[in-house]
Every structure is written in C-alpha cells, then in structure tokens.
Length: 134
Image 1: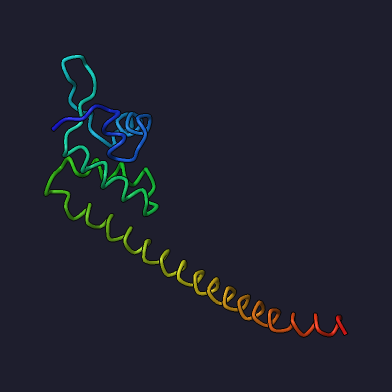
Image 2: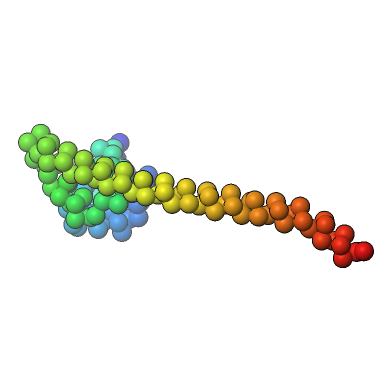
C-alpha cells in the first residue's frame, strides 16, 4: 500500500513538515515518488516512522537517531552498534522511570496529606459552626 505525505503524517502522528525535515537530515530515506512526483510512503516507511517516534518519545536525541538510521543501512554488519545504542537508551529510560517513580511517590504522599487535612477540616467545620451559633 502507498500513502501520500498527508496520509503518512496522519497515520504516523507526525506533521508533514516533520516528515520533510526527517528526510532532509537523513533520518528517513527519501520515499518513492508517484507519477506526479509526489512522495509516496510505504507500509515499511510507516513502520520506520513509528519506531522513530518511539525513540523520540524515549528522549533519544535526533543526533543519535540519525546515527542509528545511518547504521541501519549497513544491515546485519551494524547490528551490534545499533543494539548498543538501544541498550544505552533503554538504561536512560529506566533511569528516567525511576526518577519519575520517586516524583510520583512524593506527589502521592502530598495528596494523601491534603486529603487528611481536608477530612480534619470537614470534621471541625460543624463544631465551629455550632460554636458560633451559640
């Protein structure tokens, strides 16, 4: 199946400008062109775009994504180098998840504390109203 740049953008969640930028910097190979000279993306192209989006979501720098993309053209000969890039990114993601877990624990603690405070205020409010009514 083939997709226009607009369809590829919609399906990948990337903008058309981002697709053109990725092509310009070598992150994606230039897609095939239809008879009118318009870009025509394949299912394989969309799969690669999905993987790039995943890498970007993990916080991988564009520079490193370009290195990975460059290495991929060497096929199996670059498998070890590509694996190393992914291992390092996975370690960075795990570290970030641990940091976020600590932040989440802090937020949970603070939210629980505020709920306790709110309960105390709610319990005291009727007493305070009675005292002022007397």
